[in-house]
Image 1 (spheres, rainbow, N blue to C red):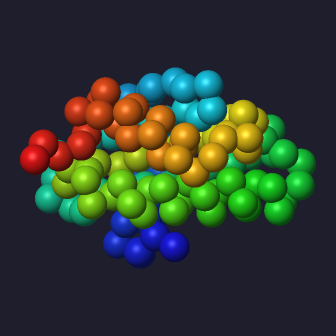
Image 2 (cartoon, rainbow, N blue to C red):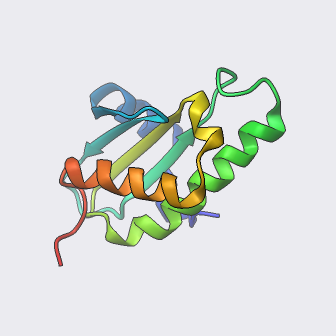
Amino acid sequence: MIQKLHRLQQGEVQQTLRYGVVIHSPSFLLRAHNTHSHTPPKCSVVVGKKVSKKATHRNRCKRVVREVFRGIIPTLKDGVFVVLVANPSLQSMSFQEIERELHNKLQALSLVKQH
């Protein structure tokens, strides 16, 4: 479970979907918006019926992606809002594959802190 301060509210999700930068992947679409504020990084996961008609499959996808985000959030810059929209191929990916791909996409957008 992602901490409440790291979850996007409905208005923030809409703002990110409207103004965020898009990066495509075979398994998901990533929208990221850097608000340039000092708020903690926040994220949200969207898994529609296009992924699976069964709610149990969609919920499992959401749980896995949220767990990936839980490990990645500490490395994100402040003020970053991220929305991940899942594609059907996400179901067949392992935790490590999702984690690696998501981290690479976030690095490509320069949203990860430099150590």
